[in-house]
Image (cartoon, rainbow over all chains, first blue to last red; front, side):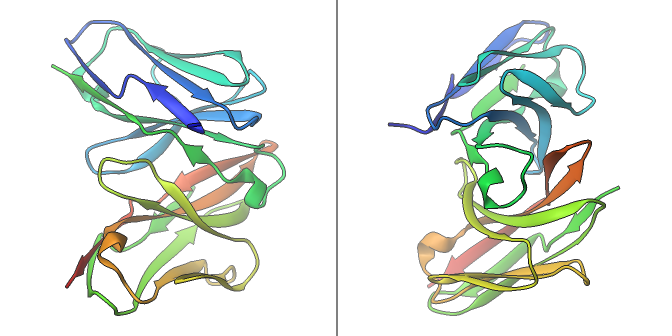
Length: 117
Length: 112
């Protein structure tokens, strides 16, 4: 009964390849997020979707394309992978993102460690 | 813009008390979260503050002063399992939505 799940947990690939990471939440939340955590452990928002609608896009290169087929899923596709894309990618979800308060608490998935060689 | 500062590393002894500080500068402040992250794992929610004052939750307490742009996380009766990174995160309200901005985290090592 995992709340937020991601696959795969580890991803090792060559530069120039295209890869996808999948995320699912069973919390009934309206909002989902993708974060990137680099080698310095700095966690930075990339995208946010609210009820399948893109809300936040933090000037991420357009090689990164999120897709939300329904509000329980938010996938991340990365084209033409570069060395600098190596990081841990976390998916998260929250009940909503507009009201403020503890209802905006975000719950994180286990992360996907991406290594680009 | 936004700026969140917290110490990079701290050490403490099992059974002791430790205070992790966080200072922030942001427009549209709408609350502050503390998360715990063990190495190789996901961040997990610890506490939330939006009003000035202290929120207590078992061994963990979190304090906020909005006028000073300052928060701290207080951990009492430290246990070895408390060795982790502690992330201060500020909610910034902009364009009709809240966005969570994280600090770089404080790595706490608890020694016997």
